[in-house]
Length: 153
Image (cartoon, rainbow, N blue to C red):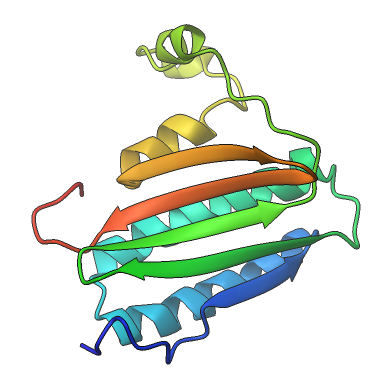
């Protein structure tokens, strides 16, 4: 494993607002996995969370209108954590009311499940931290993962 404080990995990935651009994320994460010696389980969690967040930005934030930019920056906190910060210029995302969100995560029979609204619970399940911040011209979502053994997953 490399010295995490060294910046030898491509630390930023820039995408446009096309779902097809999401295919660029997996090889980028694979490169990071080699650099940071990430487990397969952690790579899966990172890919899942990034795909969920990015596809929602493209589909809902940008309404699949091409030509908009979004960036993903990766940052290591020593050897204990890795975080991915996604920034877009889409209209502000309004997180659901925490009480409504908790009610939405209660068990529901499969037949009653409706599309949508499952992204945040999914990301919370696979990431160690999840923070959202409105920016003057968009949104910033930071998804954090512990690199320490026996954490989270």
